[in-house]
Length: 97
Image (cartoon, rainbow, N blue to C red; front, side, top):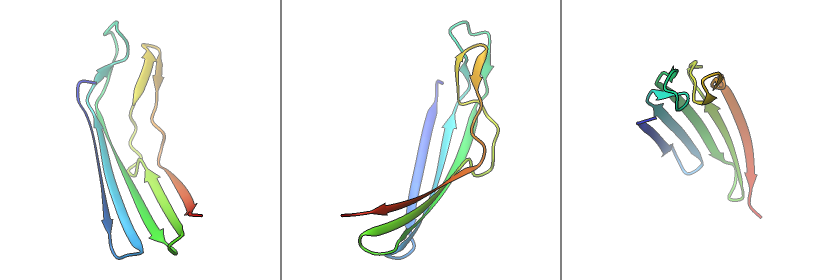
């Protein structure tokens, strides 16, 4: 794509709890060097919630494609075009030793 931008912001509500919000934008692009197929531009919104249980333990929930947008992020040629993942979430527990 000619233009691509990603912005992520984290806001700590207090010393244990934080929220995050991000946007990814990608302008239209051709699927291959033939310039016969064009993928439309898209924007994807992601979010996160962070919680520090203790000094050594953190839990986190990330949600990708928050508004369940349908788009085509990449292509390998004019006939092999990838579709975006639907709304999905990932839960992580992180520990420090």
